[in-house]
Length: 308
Length: 253
Image 1 (cartoon, chains in turn orange, blue):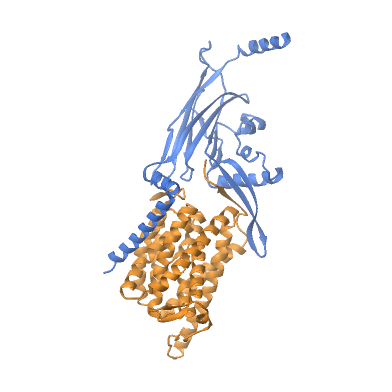
Image 2 (image 1 turned 90 degrees about the horizontal axis):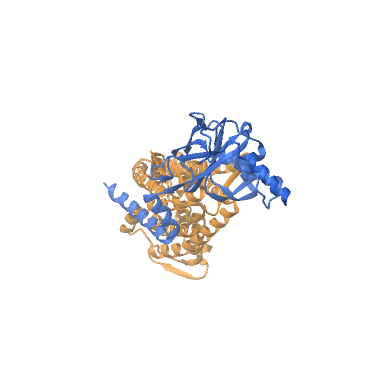
């Protein structure tokens, strides 16, 4: 069944859209990530214009997180104070990201920067995650009891000026690294159409030493608020949010995520992280190849401005 | 002066006895509506070649050739070229084509080069290449190269095309032509130009307009995204939050 997407101005198979939404939703439920980093590339590779894909997936990412954020909030797993700082700086970063998005699109370099961004970011994160999970698995095999690495009490980042007390996270740290993380994720997230949960969680854990019981909830709350703001920015600035496309992806994604979460209970944490790392690396390599290999067609075309 | 008048009179006298033809034509639909299930649309152009109104003669003499040119709304379009630098492929060169047709299809009753000469074809913008040859600040050679590639890309997308068997004559003078407008045909005003050729010269022409437009819900969405972008964005976020929340509630147990 074909469905016409009014902003992308092309017709796509409805089951294909809901299907990839569901598949990515399954993986995102399984690994506890937003799934934007899979969905945006999938849409781009299947012919949706890059700008529409990025902007619409932003809307989908918003839908992927509220139920998780709510249940964490009920359990007291959200540090609202910390989330507020992250969201405010994140929205600021998103302004920059959306502006850069429009500039790059007009200059014809949007696809290049998105491919490079995915390659560098996913490649870096993927290698780190793979290293960590392989090490954990090897240790386990040798019979060493793996203990969650206890965060050191302080590192140099905490010593920066402008300290603020975050009660729920039991932290008394400088806001500068918090703002920097928010700014970076806001910028990258709006430019690449990803929620950034897979950068946010390690950053909170390893850089800020946020305790484990509030990391996921805070990250989810931050993703909802920041990607919501980014969706609005994209709608105003580039006008390329396709609500119908986003809705089809949402429906698939929300349903898929529930099954993914159920399946995730049968796998161990290290295995999950290892699989996720492989997945992330695969996407990074796919983008890397598209940059390095001789393209099938060295010419491309685009519409400048709107139709008249 | 007198010589000029004489020439004019002679010319008129020479023209008068020749057969004059006119084209009576129409098309199957004057609006194509894009709904949620829009998957392209079939259009039919048909017409008859008849003697000029008020003329003495009761018949026309062929053989005729008919060419239908369907032209979509114009856009500014850019063609870009990638090249290999620092180990990666990136866009390094581009040419902007102003007011370039977003859709262009030619249907004809025979091979175009058999129907008439190259000059007539390009002069009347019957060949796709004619649209890419308009003067451009990029310079002639670059415009020609990029224009050719742009037309190739548009043809791959199904937006440009030449069908030299697209027009069928059902009798000596009655023709019909079918065109399947693809689902990615951009909305906007379209023009269908019909040319009648005889012995390589255009003897009659007629143009008809039709519109491709989004209707109903699709139109509402497309309009609100450009006219009320802020509200549209807010609606997207509200929809996302609601869908996400609902999903959590439905699947809780």
